[in-house]
Image (cartoon, rainbow, N blue to C red; front, side):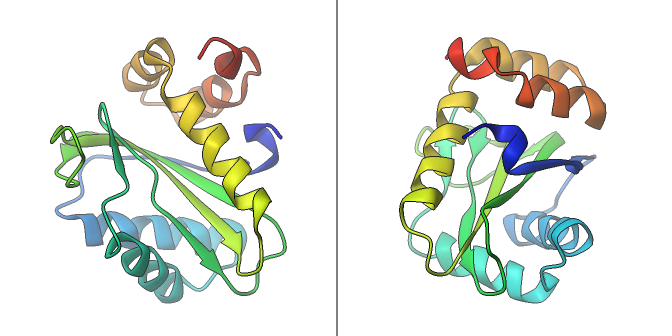
Length: 154
């Protein structure tokens, strides 16, 4: 599995700021609706429900919000670069400026976990994260994320 198989170029966005985690999820919901035809409000509810189990901020300014959704037949994702970092309740208490949201079919088992592991490995690469933060252009962000050696360097 490669990121290019779960992330479409039009699902990569740069937002100036989000006033809250819920507002960020609303922005992600809008992306999921326009790119993957998922219902925006259902997407936001699913993300908030998962977040209520524990924060998906994994540290170092990275969050991996995710949810299982009906109406999907494959794992899909959306990547957001926030120009103004957001408090996410991360384990290291650092605000989040890189968020990669994953949406999986309700009955997906191992594929969801493989995708989550792939995104996690990719965004643990500090050199890649530095490049992502330095390039607020969605096309460049997509290229950086989907270049196969990005994961190998992690």
